[in-house]
Length: 296
Length: 309
Image 1 (cartoon, each protein chain N blue to C red):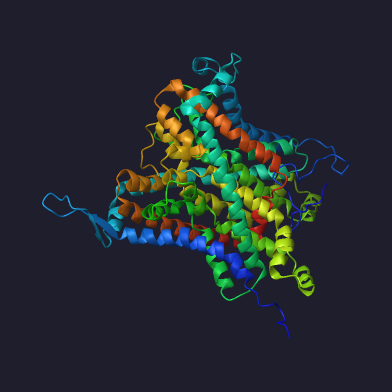
Image 2 (cartoon, each protein chain N blue to C red):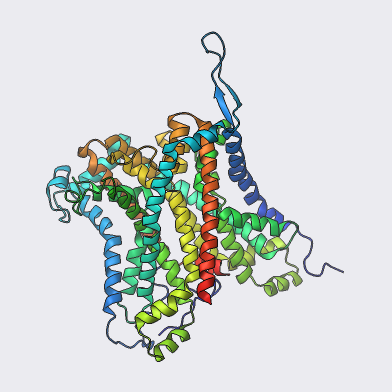
């Protein structure tokens, strides 16, 4: 008798093979190599004038101590967090607001607005930053760059956050809107019969039911914020307000490629990955608890 | 009023553009009541915020360098500035801009196609088969969704540099092929849309497992595959850090890298702004066009639907 549920087949393993091999080669191996490098250091060559080839030796936790003790590394994390504190709530708040407006009754120009707000998602981050860079530069600014200093010591955080928000707003809006369209309409009609206004329905009925989706987009935005690199790097050539170590990824890049200390770069980079995963897990847990609380 | 149809990832859903929602036409029951002005105006403000920079860049690209600094920001110029800017852009450094554009297309189309195949195959295998280690493997992939791929760019470079494999097309494409999120999406979609009964019927008819995947599974998964393709296409097209570390020959640069290099070179000289401005415009237009053409075929709802499941 043949196997009841499935014939013996190696197809699934074969289908998975490319993904698994690539995952091992380009995620696991580089990760492992970075961890290895982070425990090593370069020792100047021996010989009378130190002219022999430098050798790589075990460094223990030296690189990590250096990264931890490096004030600039923490400053870069602080700047990243500041941009995230401005950008993430703005992204989620505005995309939720727009999604609720799209879903509200008797709203006009829905198709146009949805497409217009989604458009920036098709603009590459670097190009979006160049675009906004010209919007901010006093010489070319169509939005009053000669009146407002977009690259001031405080405003620069808003300027960077704005570029990031502009780019992802539409995508988040569509995800939230789609989730809204999936909610049972009868519920809204019932609330309407009970005399609830459009605004009350949006705030008291729709919003709580969006909790799982909002959790998702918040976590995604958070992960996005932690990877902040394109915007400050691209703005750097046009302003002094952004240093070459402005955010953590720029710091890692500078360590590894400008100062040529790949060992320290590897330690900082591994530290960053650990911090990111920890932050994401924490955010996910907290938001899930909030979501569960609001379902009751 | 049109019934809401986007229950789960499987339901026929709302596309990005005009696919879903209500049209208000065709007597679907929407009463032509008072316009909801508050919601409409909020949306219009959002639309202006999102479109204004693009409108401005279109206008700015029509200006010659001196006009750029002297005329009103939103007044277009008709003195031939647009075409002279365009000529200057494509003439720059023996036409390297066109080379960058071709590179971007190679990276994004090649990478997204291969990635869709790799992730689609893996998702189908995880969604439709149980075998030794499959649960464990799936958990690993879910965990990897949390791992920001971009942070691996520098370790990836260090490893590839050690092996002497940097500075070519493969160094940019290969690291981006596996997307844990895409595999997750395909797995959830395969589970929901490729029904076991259909597969069982095919089995009874004597179809091989491979044949079932190639002619039934892959076809039923098409909406998920299109979505994954476009998400990956945009992701790779927009990627900056990976090519930034992997490449140092400008002949290999994608558009993003090239434009950034152009800004660095011309950064100090306002006289060169027009070339960067027209470059920005030219790099937005094709992508926006592709994207508007394809918007009805891809489904962002899978992103939210996939996670709810």
